[in-house]
View 1 (cartoon, rainbow, N blue to C red):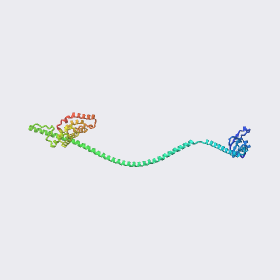
View 2: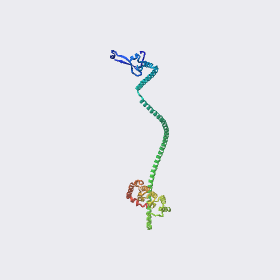
View 3: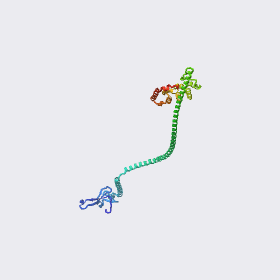
View 4: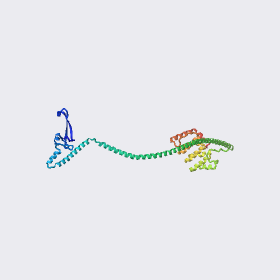
Length: 372
């Protein structure tokens, strides 16, 4: 058995006290490759156990013994040997498989990590697909932004040009506004000058009228005839036929006819028409009232002040506004207030202020004979 090299052996170190020697002894123990039982070394030496093709077979599993027993049974040892070889091969395969399974069982399991890695790979694939789809969208967005940028630059240039044009127009408007303000101031000065001239003219007419009255008085005293009063408003023969016809139109039922008559009489610039125009301050038509008020203002009819203050309560805003402007021009009293659109309480406060002013100055206006 010295030339055999069985692989199924184990080396066991036996303590010295068990073998009666001071040094330790070493012995080999063999195991059957079929039944995995220990095989004594004496069985191997005596031939009871056998080594075939590097495999150890115990006395029970010894193929030689089985072959001799089968040969005695009638020449079937070859079949038994074949069967035994098959069994041995199966056992060997089983042992190797078992050994391989044990080694595989000792191998670390990476299934969870592999599963996680697979999931991460799938997520990365999905992310990559999303990024690829997003790349197309980003390219479209970039292209759109590029186009929008070009359009925006064009729009900004157009707006800049439009803004410069508007700035030039604003400057032109400011220049025009300054010119208008200057013209307005000049117009106001002219209106004030015209008012002063009208007052001077009225004063001169009053003087002339006074002189005419004195002359008439002297003439009457000489002729011993009674004096003729000059204060009664009448369609005097001193008026032209045209003026007499216009005075008749003042009594027309047609508001348009009355307005046209007042407008035509305004062109006469005759203060003797004042007594004929004052009654029309109570006209039912607001446009007729408006034209009468402006005519009386131009005629410096200060005897109409009381009626004009009453018109500050008129229902029509244009009549109230024109009355207030005429009162300021005729009296020089600059008591202005929002007579057109102010609240009723504010308007009433302003009207009372004018009424109080009239109480203090009534004799200066209602007693003037020049307007009668």
